[in-house]
Structures are given as C-alpha cells and as structure tokens.
Length: 141
Length: 394
Image 1 (cartoon, helix red, strand yellow):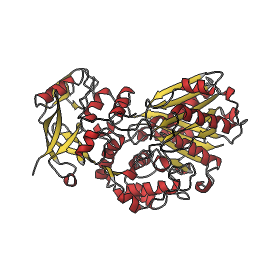
Image 2: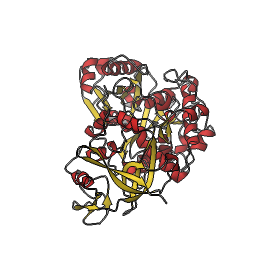
Image 3: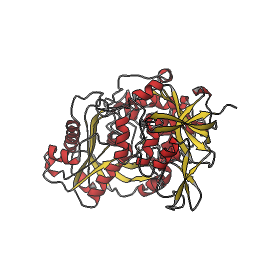
Image 4: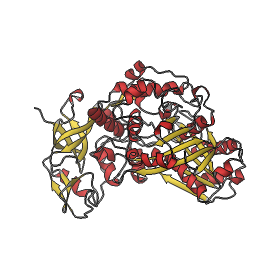
C-alpha cells in the first residue's frame, strides 16, 4: 500500500520555492531575505516570520555554514536512500545569519567525526534531468 | 482544590493491538467504538457524536456513524493531524458535550499502521504535505535531503538536545527499558511477553543515529475509543467516571510544520512550554499532585522534551530520573504505565488516554499506580504542536 522513492525524489516545487531550485541549477544558493528587516529565512514563507513584511528578495549567499544538527541514516523506507546508507543528513546554519537553518546531506567526512559546529561548504548535485540539489561538504581544517 | 470538571470519560474500548490485523480499518474503528459504548453500559442509540483524527489512513466519522447505525449525529469532527491531536479529540468531544451540542460523543482512532500505510517514505511525505501537517514549502527540502520518516526528524532534535544538555544514548536506553518493564505487566501491550535489558537496547540496530530501533515506537494495527459525556450523565452509567479537569490543543505561535523545530533557534522548546502553566492552573492542581503522567512517546526523546516542557523535570535530568526508578510504577511520578507507544503500541497516542482512564478507575492490574487520583496525558512528539489533558478520579 505504501509508496517509496526508488529514484532521487524531485522536489515538489511551488511558485514560492521555484527561485531556490532555479538558483541551484546555476550553482547558486539563494535564500529569502526580508526587504524590510533584512533577515534571512528558511524554509520559504510568503511573509517574514519576524516582521510580517510581504516584501522579500532571493539573495545569493556564500554557501558557507556550520553543522547545527545531524543524523546518520542507517535505515530508510525508500530504496534510493537505503542504497546510500549509512549516510549523513543534517541541518546547516548558514554563515550569513545565526539561527537560519537549511537541511541537506553532509559529505566528505566519516559520520563519527562530525561535530556540532563543523564548517561546511555547499555544492550542487544533479539528481534528475532538471534537478540540482544542495549538498554540504565538510571543509578540511 | 481541583476545578469543576469540563466533561467525563464514561467508557473505554480497544481492539487487539498487533502487527497484522487482517481486517479493515473500518472494522477496527467500529469494534473499538462499540467496546467503549458497551463499557459505559450505554445503548448505541444514545450516541450522537463522533470525533477522530487521521493522516489519510483511517475511516471518517461518517463511515463510523453509518457502521454503528447511529440514530442521530449532533456533532462530528474529522481532524487531519498527527499524534499531536490525540488528547485534542478528547477535548473536542468534551467541548461538544459541555456546550450542549451533543450528549454522548465517542472519540476514536483506528489504523493499520503496521500492515497498511507505514509512517515513512514517499507516500507518507505526500500525506504530510497534503494533510497540512507540513507546509508544501517544507516537504520538498526534506525529501531531497533523505528525510522521509519521523524517526529522522526526531533524531535530529534529539542530537541538538545531546549537544546542548549532554543527553546520551544511556539516557534514551533507560527510558526504553522502563517502558518495556511497564508493558510486561500490561495484557494490552504488544510487548507484554518480550523483556528488554539495557544491553538489548544498546545492541539494537541504528535507524537514524542517535536513534536505535528500540528508540522508536511500534507501528501497530488496532483501534481504541473513549466515550465522553457530561459529568451529570456519566454518573448514571456503568463505570466510575473519570473527569476531564482541563485540556488544550495548542502550538507555538510560529509553528510552521512538523519539523519546524529543526529550523528554529529554539529547537528543544516544545508546545508544552507555552501552555503547561495554564493547563495546571485551569485544573486547579500542582504538578506535584499528579499520580502519573502518560507522555506521548513516538520516540524516547519525545518523553524528554515534553517532560522538560511541562516542568516535570529539569533540563537534561531525564536519564537520572528514569534510572532512579522515579518514572517506574511505585516511583515519584510513574510515566507511561502501559509501556507507552514504545512498548504497548502506536494507536497514535489515543491509547495513552485509555490507559489513564484504566489507572484512574483502579483497573491497572499489576501495573496499577497505588491510589491514583490525578493524571496528565500528553500528545505531541516534542515539537511545537501538541495537546494534553488533566484527568481525575471522580
């Protein structure tokens, strides 16, 4: 009865989120920034959760960040994810603004070496014909 | 001095809880509802209201109304919601009878959570978005990050708690083992015959590190139900009534989805911080008056986040609390006397309300809390949405 992902899922893009995914296609990480209070926010919303403004811009950010939380996925109901396991997925705090978090796979490090605050850099993986997804690669120190 | 009851619970019912019912969800819902009505000693013709919640995996009140052959339907509500609504539907039924919309309302939850729709994977992601549990702007970022089942969401929250408060897998294991010990004394529990040691916990496979398999609740086939009526009507029925003193269905004001906690700077703040004080004050009781607490435990960590949020323990103290025996039967505050969703089964949290009623009637058998007078029941996985009840022996 249940349905599972056998291939990398394509994002179910809405008109609100389309600029994010278009940015990924061009190797750019775009995050919404409020035109009135200048705060970044994620995931996308129509109004600013801080100041209620409806005006925003999709701004390119550096793609640098640090690990705020992570899990090592050993079991997934989806065959495509199970085939990758064990892999690490996490929540990244972007360098531009403390408290602004973006999820994604964390690459380039052994799972037991990951620590809170680990520095990462975004990269983009093509997972479908028209889909590029942000991934986060550990920066060696 | 506790406050005047809003409504009373006059009947409880449940089906067998198992991994493969071989029955329709409709059959499970009807059996659970009939059992609750019969338990109250009520004629089905008197029932005039139904409430339930589901994630596209149950049968609506319209189906159950027809199946029970109700002669009137004065109040109904079908919520699209996760387990955070379990106490909420009981409160919905209480409000219906308190406002005179209906006289006898059955709140039920039924699902084939093991053999039918599983809680994970592509289809489940779609259900979460389509049923408004996640924003449609959220799910696409989780799916593409490999996050397609609840264990992953909550493991991520748990990791933050570990980083911030020093919580360990030893602590989570102490919770899992306590739940199992309670289930071993519960004939309703799926794990009634399966013992668990801390070693068993530590040797169970990783699902989403920091969660092992034994950090996760039991996906279950089954159903349960409660009959809610006014305190006056409850007095004339077969069972000693259990009173609803207060309750809520609430959230943080900036809750944007089931995984919002992971996008929030306050990732370990739950719905409970926002609403606990008012819940206790409306009930007219103090936390120390509680005889037990049934805390929603889709995962071990969920107990930690909520117990802290309700002010039952200090931040980071859960492991010590469980290891000391304080959460066991006979302890300072027994937690999940049925074994919880972890070891009784996952009827999406409504089974924890049923257990609270059993305890307050004194029907807990070997797991009975001595002189149980007041109980807290919560629903919500330690995110920013949840519901809760304070129940009292009449």
